[in-house]
Structure formats: structure tokens, C-alpha cells
Length: 251
Image 1: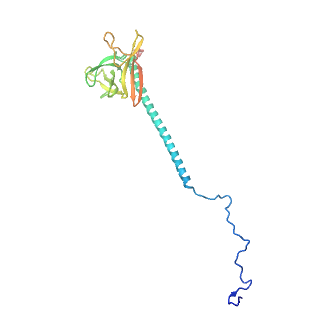
Image 2 (image 1 turned 180 degrees about the vertical axis):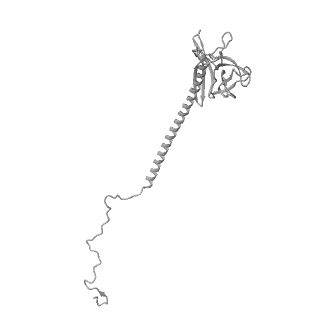
């Protein structure tokens, strides 16, 4: 029980309440982090900015690489297609000339090596052009009716159309007066030239027009030159004109 002193203040008896003061030897120790779990921390502003700069530089380099590869592939692909076109046109024209010179595949005495002939132009007038005959025409010829054989062809170059073939059949009733039809071989041909060989001088010459001999008769060239142009690319193809070939009989 509590005893009252002289001053009227109650005093606790010894052993009635435990002491609330901490023991002097007990001290609070700080918490230590658990082993194996590193303390977590956030990125600083400098680190974030540096990462963004590196990412932007990487994306720029990748973009430039992809753009350069695409440009190189497109350029090479476009040039490849153009070269294929020049070779296809040259090969097709060479096959036509070879066919015209092969008398075994023809049924008319007009067949033979290509020569110079006066040809009526579709727009009117005449011109001296390199002409040859085809026994059954060509796949490029579009007939208004039934296709006819014995087709006379003439090779020419037009500024607006490129390399063309004038053609009409000798079996047409108005062959002598009718204007020929026109088939475009290539719009990329910018010039048609002729190579002549002089046996006396043993030299070659390239002419822009068909040439005559000393007697005023047109001479057939030995070769023809086709110059193709597209954008900044120029290609030249040479076709050797065939000589007359005597074929074997059909029996």
C-alpha cells in the first residue's frame, strides 16, 4: 500500500512497481540489411539522359545503314533490269535478221541478206532504210485481220518512238501503195548507226546514215550499232548483219 509522507505526497512502496528506466548496459543497435539482397536505388537524371543519347545515336546509325542498303539495292536492281532490256532487244533483232537470211526457212525469192530499200513511211513520203523479209512475221506484229506470211520489214529510228520496225505483207493487195504498220522495239534507243568496212584501206567506219558506193548504189553495212540511254546510263550493242545461208532442201 502507498504510504503518505509528511507533505501529503504518496510514495510507492518498494517492490510494488517495476522500474521504467532502461538498463544502462542495453543500447539500441541499427538494423542490418539481410545478406544476398542488395539495397535498391533509382537511376539518376544524368544516367537517364546518357541512356537516351546513346539510344538516339544507335537508332540514327541503324536508319542510315538501312537507307544506304535500300538505295544500293534499288540502284543495282534498276540497272540490272535496264541491261536485261538492252540484251533482250538486241537478241530479238539479231534473231529476226538471222531468220531473214536463212533461205531454207523462207518461201519467197525475196528472202536473203538485209539490204537497203526505199520504204513508204506511215506519215507519208519515202526513206531509204535497211530492209529484210520474214517468212511468217513476228510476235510483235499485230494484224488487223488474219496474219499473212512474206512480211517485208524495215528498221528505223524515230526521235519520239525509238527503234521501230515498219512492216507489211507482200501478199496484201495494196502492198505497193499501202503505208506500212509500225512496231516499237525499244523506246530507250537514242541512235542507230552503221558500220562499214573498206577492204582497200582495211579500216572500219561508223556512219549515222546508209552509205552509197562510187556508183551511187546503196551498200548494206556490215554491222549496226544501237545506243541505249536511260537516266545516266548508256549502253551500246552491236549486231553483225548475217550473210545469205544456203539451206538444205526440205526433202
